[in-house]
Length: 171
Image (cartoon, rainbow, N blue to C red):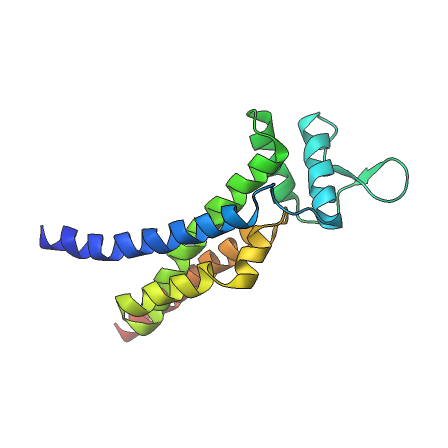
């Protein structure tokens, strides 16, 4: 019971920070996510992929060109969610929202691991999730939110692997 209370004392503030970040993201984008020239390429590639044309995008030249300038995972994810019935904007909102939530958890884990402090971990999560530039990137139809999440995950995995290697050498 005591360990459940201890976990609740961590999970509740972490969840609160995550929900506040998500709320700020949705408040900042009442008319949908921002679209830039890069966004149009992701949307075009997702549309082509959904129609079975492969990963192709419309550049400024006429016709669709192979989608080789941008990472394909985001466009494929957009097409998958769009194929489930969501709009492209709603799909990107889901992807970016989930990326923001996962980034909060990963930032917490990294900061807690580095500092040994749960409080510092919570502040680390808040610093990432509530940062203006992080929210600005999540407010666009870009692949950066997913990249940041994957980068935080890779960094956490690397620190854990490094710790295991250090412990193995000590034995």
